[in-house]
Length: 374
Image 1 (cartoon, rainbow, N blue to C red):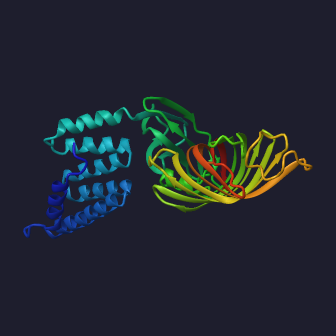
Image 2 (tube, one colour; image 1 turned 90 degrees about the vertical axis):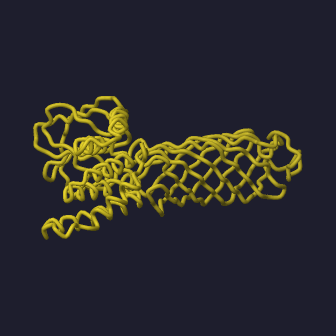
Image 3 (cartoon, rainbow, N blue to C red; image 1 turned 120 degrees about the vertical axis):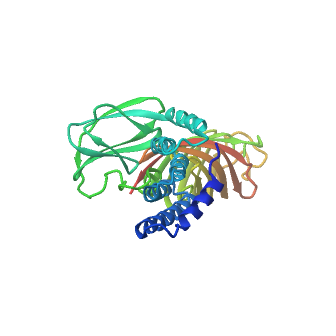
C-alpha cells in the first residue's frame, strides 16, 4: 500500500477548494473550514508533526464527510507510530465507503495489531488516562485496553492528583498497574511531562544536565608501550545545549584516568557530542563525540620498555612525566532506561596524544552510566 495518496490528496484538495454554487451558505462555510483544516494537515505532515496532522484531517472529515480524509488521518497516525489511533482511523475509512484497496488496508491493520500491548489500570476513581500526553481512556476500566508498544508514559489524572508510569512496553505483552495517586503541587506531572507533549521530546528536554561515570580500557595500537594497554576511568559532566526531533548537541567536561603497567595518566578534556535519535519513540541514541584537552602521562622506571622513553633508563628519578595535547574522537550508543538514567557503550574511540616524543595512538572502549537532573 502506498504511503501517501498523492493524486487522491490533490483531487480532494481541489474538491474542498470549490463548492458548487447551488449549496447553502452554511455548507459552503463548512467546506471552506474543511479546506483550511486539510491544508493544515498537509503542512503538519510535511513538518513531521503527525499527531497534529491526523487531528487536522479528522476535523476536515467531520466538516466535509469526505472519506479519503480518514485515510490521510490513518496514514499520519501510522507514520507517527500512534498505532491504536491508526487502527481506528483505518477502520473508520473502510466503514465510510468500502475502498478498492480494502484488503491491503485490512492487512496493514492486522500488522499494527501485532505491535500493540494490553494494559490494565486498577482504580475505582473516575480519571482520564493519557498515553504520551494524549488522552485515550477513562477509569474505572472493565478490563485491559490496547496501547502502542515502545517506550511510553502512562498518566492517570483525577483533578489535581495523578499517577504516572514510564517504561518500555513489549508487543503482545500484558501489563497491570495499580494507580496510587499523588498530589500535583506544581500543576504538571512530576517527571516533567505536560499534557499534550510528545514523550520523546519531553523526556529529553526535561533533564539537560548529566553526571557521567565510566570505566573501560585503552589498547596500544602500535605495540611499542608508549603508552601500553591500560584500564581507563572517566568522570564527567554534560549539558544539552540544543534539542531537535531527531538531533541534539551536548557540551561536556571530562576528567580521564588510566592505570596499570606502571603508568599513571590523567587529564582534562572539553568535548562535544552530536546525538542522533534513530527511532522517534525509542529512547536510543547514536553518538559521535570529539574531546580535546591536555593529559599528564607519568611512568615509572619499571614500566614496560619502550624505545620512545624521553627520560634516561635507568634513571635517578623514580618516574618521568610527559605533558601532551589529547584528542579523542569516538562513536557510542546510549539507551535511556529512566528519564533520569541512561547507559552508554563507547564502541570505538581513538586516543591521540601529541607531545615530544609523539605518543602512540590507542583504541579506547568502555561503559558509562549517566544520571540526568534538572
